[in-house]
Length: 278
Length: 242
Image 1 (cartoon, each protein chain N blue to C red):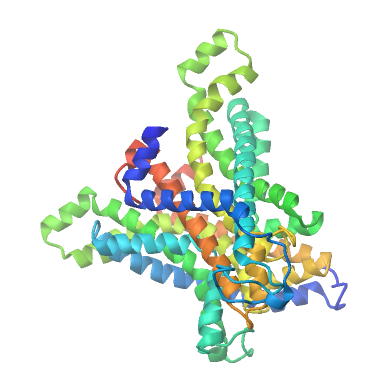
Image 2 (image 1 turned 90 degrees about the vertical axis):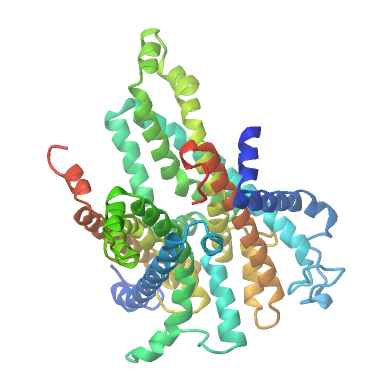
């Protein structure tokens, strides 16, 4: 783990990614502690430009935008991590089961994956949210479903290549049950590439969450998220462009940092790709 | 497909009015992404390891990671509100190609940016791989000019992975068209579905999603066939006896 992080640090883009990611993590950990209440209204102080008291200015209700950005980034990152964790675990389980058991179970699971990926992602998310209602928990569920096929297919491919290796036969002969085989021996072998894929998907999830919240289909007010901040700013774009650009910049920094970090992690964990930055 | 419960018009008519706008937007976006992605990617691949290559690489990542709706808002703010070079909303008057093109410029750019970055990196990687192969070294040994090697021979091989991801590209264009259509207030399938969701107009939501999926799946089928045609190895793996 330490050697891996050292490898990430060694590549110039990985270093940028690490610094940006660390800055965002500090921002969401300590930001909400040192900034004023993000929901504190001060209508007479609306649309203030950046100043010492309000480093990012205030929004249409006079709320401090730095505080709202800290709260919103925290929501975005937490949702993204939860989504990736959920969908990688469920996807990996489904994928390993499909690869190991084969037959109609394999086909059924693959068909489910195919159905999910037959929709353009945002369209599927919009459809499900339209049916089951908006809110942070539904958003979490929807995006988790969206990312299942990726993790599942990868775990299935890994399992297929492991299934015929001698150690699996040996364990069968020793009398190991399927459940134990999966949890103790197959899943650990699938975990490495899954973690890399998961870390690369965190910024993608952040983008999708921000997009859906921007449409008003995700996190609901007064709870802030990067998407709702951009949306609130967008509505009043003709009066003040600070709120929009500030939130958009933080969103861009977060996804850029996470992407650079994830890619450096992928390169460092794959000996074949070492050295190249593509 | 039934009758719209709000306007009392057939949903098929509403969709057939909205679809051309979205298809124009998505195909222009994809075309822009292809042209500029190929250009930037081949420039970077010709000079690997140079400063220009690094700058293009970082720019590509920045393009990829900035969401389309953020790009759309920034473009709107800079070019329509501040500079007033382009119209703010709408899709232009029907039947006036020039007016429609002007209305298409910013939304299509917003759609394309992410894929410009993605394709530039993809082309760079696959072009570098092709250029390191023996047959290219052979051509260099024969004295074939580098420009001709890249343009005539290497690019054709390097394009195969690009065609392979075009299916995903279409899906991304349709997805992001939702945001772009809303931000630029363009009539289209994306904004149609969105407004129907807000109005709880479920027949339109259903029909809209069905239609989008149909377009997406068809596009993917075309890409698969194109891919098999370009790369005979794929065709063989799909054929009988595999």
